[in-house]
Amino acid sequence: LQMNADKKVSRTAKKSQTAILLAGEKLVLSGNINLITAENLSKYSGYSVGNIYHHFKNLDQVFINIFLKKRLEIFLELADEINKFPKNKSCEELCEILVNKSFEKVTKLKIKMLQYLYKIVLTKSEEPEKINLIIDVLIDPLIECRKRNKTNSLRKIEEDEMRLLLRSFQAFVRSPFLENQTIAGTLAHRKLTLDLCQKLFCTTYPSKLTEQ
Image (cartoon, rainbow, N blue to C red):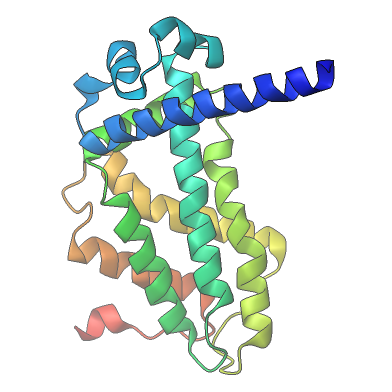
């Protein structure tokens, strides 16, 4: 009986946490940092502020959870794209997918909200390193993709090097947004990132930027 009661409590807690996180996602997607308050989270979730703090240590932890969860979803989608990548297509075409998907997701959030989320993860999270570790879900898919690819256009890269290269790629996408650079999200930013991707992962590097 006690075990059944514990399971019921656990299911109820999970349901509450899910509702609170979904409400937090709505606030994030609004793009308005001023809406990120315990009162608004309570309003959108239907749970009292006290109940929210029962499930999460503080407000920051709610949005850290949301941000890391969303980043994992993004990279798992990318991993799926890599796993489905046709064996007769080139590294350049793979890079186009990686770049387009990365920009598609990052540009959905307003820059100020993106900056706010990165800041709390780096300064308030108990495990700030997770912000970089999540991209490691792409390591095995990329290594396996090269093994089955028939074009000889993907460079052979071992796990340790792949881990570092992915961090370089990730920084290239996000840094202009975080630093308020005027290039952030522009066509030039995409082209430069595609250029980098080809340099990092392809056996031959077509200098497309200089040709255009």
